[in-house]
Length: 293
Image 1 (spheres, one colour):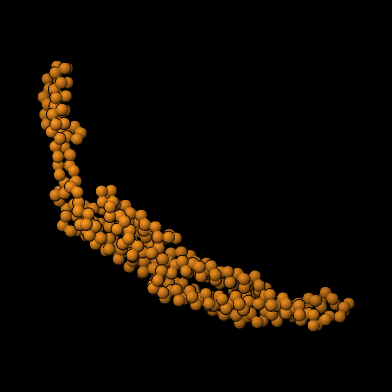
Image 2 (cartoon, rainbow, N blue to C red):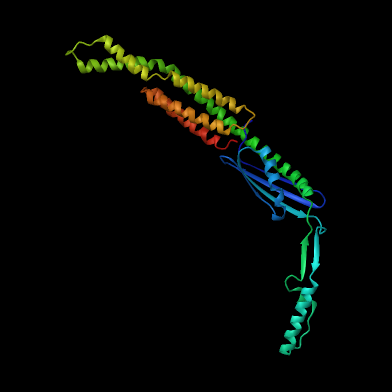
């Protein structure tokens, strides 16, 4: 099944204490590059998250944004540093007495000082955190994959259409190929006769051998056979359930190599024009393949 490498998905889950919101954006990338942004105090679940993501996504850049909210304040413990508060009070009183100020020290003065009151987070149960996040992450990943499949179907549809056009064009070249040898032989004979005129007697046997030699060098049958083989493999890939992006990229390179050889071997104008059209369609397919997982 063809999947695009671009997609977006969102997932959310709450277990009554924690609420996780996960957003995933996937982009084109040669490899499987996973980047996760989450609160530092739950970074211990990052490796588990990456393993889960790899079960869904084989290729592409995956940007994951994880937000955690606590439903109540039951996970927070407020602590008062009484000894520090007393030290601040004594320091204030010393300043007042030293400067002869008519001031009174209040609670408002003390609580403004750093580290008097601290709100510490009670350590979470790692297993509970992961189970909650896992549910939200699964939902987001499922939504990403659905979008990638929808876009992949459109990509496959376009590639299949262009593949049919290419197959029709290579068949035109295949029909034209046998004529190339005969045309070459006739042109060679005419050229030699033109050069030699009546001055020398033309050796037909040698001429025929020379024509066969150069015609053999311009034979494109093998390239056409290989080209058709690659086209068949490309069609099979489009119906595969595996990740085929890299294989498709390789096949396009091979198809380009074969059609370039066909173009360089043949001097036939019609074949040359058809080669240009094939290369244009292959380039369009190559651009589409860059977005396939």
